[in-house]
Length: 213
Image (cartoon, rainbow, N blue to C red; front, side, top):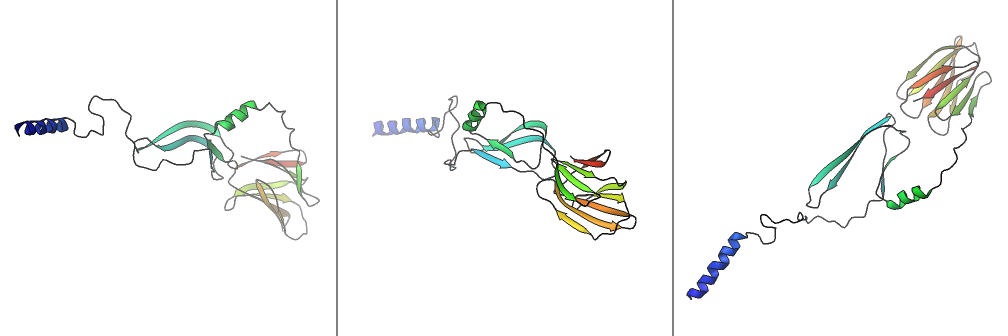
């Protein structure tokens, strides 16, 4: 009986020394124990983030992730690059895409795009090339300014003309619609945009160019 009690006493001391045998004891090195969270998730291939039309510069990209022990952390990379809000921003972890890009041979630069005619009223014609709108006319530009909600450029030209108001809907990016209206001693052209932009105007010999940025 005394022997049996002695054995129980020894076992009790061992359990006190190691309160939880399923976790590393003090001084032992081990990987962090994992949580019971579900880990059978599909691997990341590629995800896309879109930005609103007034975005112009990307400053930082942050990634929030779950650690092996179930805690959440964040890592970031600082950037300072211009972006085109029309194009999505991708995050990818696919080596196949990286390898295929490395194997691609350099291609020749594409020829510069030509102007596309959008609208012709005889005394004024509109052409587009990327973010440039060329307004071809010999009429004097009285004023031009930008309005919001929706974003649109207003241009007033000096001419005494008798015509009904006209609306021309456009296809493609940047320029959405051109509205033409007649007032006393001048006519007004309203160019509706598809997002938030500023514009720069450049006067040419027989035209005006509007550059969005």
